[in-house]
Length: 463
Image (cartoon, rainbow, N blue to C red; front, side, top):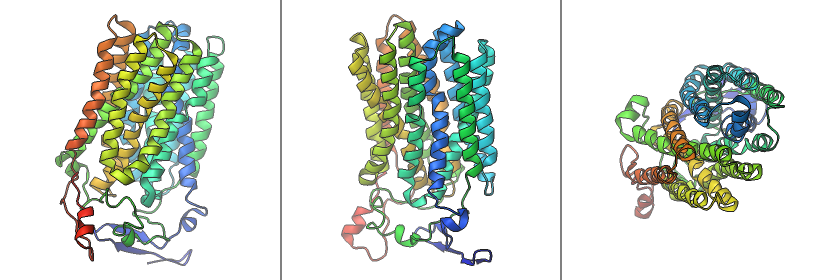
């Protein structure tokens, strides 16, 4: 097949596993520029929406003071936002799959919802209005943007999926740091309207502009400069191959559910999200009820967000060496241990140094799970169903997020603050243990042509 407009020969080839690739078109032919734009634009959009999760935590003490809400009411706003963001992500994946080339529809819809959310939070103290405007619409909008950005990077960087998804996912963590600083030091009843409404306009402008410029590649597109058949077999070219075998066959959502591994991944996300949202809500609630200094709150929340981003980047590289499942287990183990470290800091009058250090470790442990699961879903269930399968897995954040926020509420409002920390830590340890039962669907051995016994042993997959 030839594209007459560009005189480009387009071919479809298959690799050893039977996967299809569309080769022959360069990114510059399709976009008029480097595909790096399809990395930087999603990163910018993720940076913009990152303030909704970590930024809200930093702003919570000022918001409670300005609105007269109780801590539980403020937590309800965050909890419903998490539920709607997790629910909006599969919808974002569904819309992405139905877009032909342009991605303006889901991105502009998400940008409009995010603007409405921040304007609502800026102008009203009515809890019902905030739950509708900020939590429901804002969560839905953030979910649309989140999944559209992840899906875009997944399809434009099929040969560097883990590292590029980690970069974009990391922006959802450390991107909140500037707003955390502003919210912790400057936000108050006197300037709440101007700061939040101004943030809404900035978010709308950034996400909308990125959405107008973002594009989808053709289905099964592969970069012209790399032979996909060699990539699927040559571990000198693809260094992650010995520890991360591609899917033996495609697994659409129903088949992935029947395999038992997609529900297990969903449960892992539930446990991961419970830890992550427990940490955010605990730091925010403690800052209000105990009266943490603004310096301590900003440092701890910024460390949590930065750890989230750095953890994703580090584990994506580690996963090439020890396998994605192994890296996932280690990250959850670190997150679980960090909860006990936060307990130690809390029992020591919230020692600032310990609080910041263990917040960073907790962020790294919880954040890494999300980016690793994108690659794990593709490796285990195939390229064609990566977006819908990950959408299902990511929706587990709704259940886990609410659980974590409730646990944090018990800490900051109840007399016994030890049990919720222990529960949160055990959830992380349970998630790490569950990864030992995760097994890739399909045969345990793959014997590639021309490989000797030693090389065949390297490709053995135990899950």
